[in-house]
Length: 171
Length: 101
Image (cartoon, rainbow over all chains, first blue to last red; front, side, top):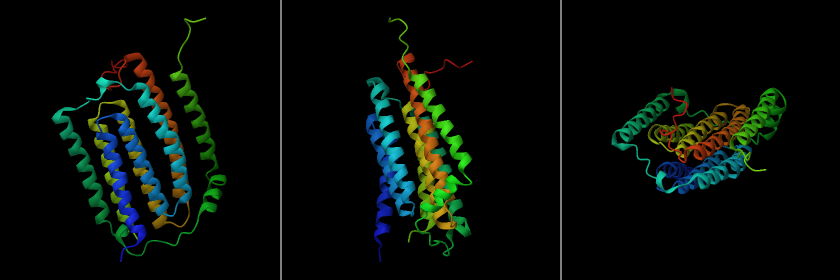
């Protein structure tokens, strides 16, 4: 008895992990940027599966619409032939694989050993909770929203000031 | 119905891939990719815990804030990469040592 959402989940696992591996290991870095966009899309599909449609649409809009496109433009701006071969050497690669494997193994063992996470009495009925999000954002979490607006404005201003080309030599 | 642990395992694997990229890669763009992957793994955890263990939508609200912060952070990092490329003609992070003492 296989549910459609189960199939979607396993397909999206392949998309997310495959996109992440392609982002880090592809030969051309621009293909890596596209793989990263696919990984973001898979995460958005996971949000849909988790009954969070608003977050999923926000993820598509901001990550795929803004961040992935920004990364693509930057890759095209700074792309060059000789920076493809950033091979870390065998020792560095082994160290990276060992670190990541140790971290993943400890996390996975901890998750599998936890009693509460594996109990069957979870999965609360959680309807369409857009109203809750609205009440939270306009109510108790409103100061965070204000500070976040300031941070966004400051970071965009800083990015523009950093990347601005000085043209003092021209009239 | 997919159990909660499956989502947690997926996000652990995604986080480990990000850590692997941060440790091994020298290219600044690949480091940006790794950081974004790790942020996504954390967001999956937030939404999964909110869906399975709590009734309210606080986790989803936090993820909304987190996505906006990640966008701001990506803008600043990419501006720094562009400036470093303009100065050094390279984005290999082991070549950028102007601030090294």
